[in-house]
Image (cartoon, rainbow, N blue to C red):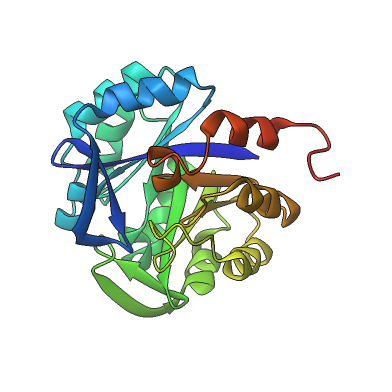
Length: 243
């Protein structure tokens, strides 16, 4: 399993939100690049970054900070939040980002996401954020009438790198992922599914592995010390970890 320690950016700082609520933020660091360096030092071989300001306003906002994170981490970085145009993608890749996560634009224009994936094969990730099984957009501020699995099916015939599935009700709540929804997504699409939201214990990582979910993003649990990144990585990489 691949594990992505998360860095969520708001006003240039590393924060975590509860259930995507911008009014419920906890600031963990004024130096996100140092956080990225710390995760890499503990053995992370990839980092997940979200530009929360960008997700809210519809364009990348924290470019200079993201570039510093890429340089400090020294490992591949996955970026989401506000990437909705060809120029946004070009800028993100110029910053050194390896994978770009597309969410809001995927709901509005799935053909653009498919075309973009063909232009950048294995570098575009579909970000599916769901509330009650339905796609949420605009930094989780709006909930659509489109089911998460249906959106994924519309675009996953393109050469996407993966699908990041986030259950908003679980995000930042330290209550475990929505395993059932993740399995449903896994069975619905021919692309690797990355779990996001609620992973806060080694048991969660173990169950995701048993459910054949090949990746997960971990945020608040790492910052608050509920889950040790080195231990999670050791479990994810151990031969025969599931017995």
